[in-house]
Image (cartoon, rainbow, N blue to C red; front, side, top):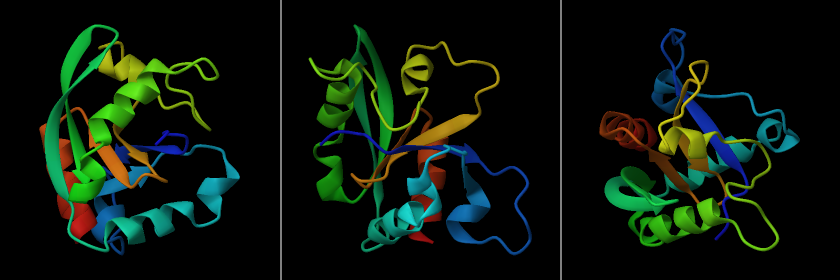
Length: 148
């Protein structure tokens, strides 16, 4: 699988009273692509909710740096998550590392070079039904929000 449509997620620090479930906890950062305006995110969330999701912490190595990444999804999707993320990070002869429809910023965050203005708390590969975070607390919030 290739991570192409990767949605950045921020923590929703000021939810509206009427927001519930996923939208009360997380906000989708604006990505500027039509896919995100025509129902891709709600369809992906619906697929994630077909069965309860779980979190799985796995060690991921990118450019010689190994960190724990907290993946969230249904068990069958998580079985390949580490390999898919490492392949996405490596790129190939046709695509550069972390190539996608929009800039994810994950490579910088993983390497500890997160820009101060970046508020991304998690990343969601919309077509692969896998969400991941570098924080175990964010992963716990993801599981709760998705399973709500």
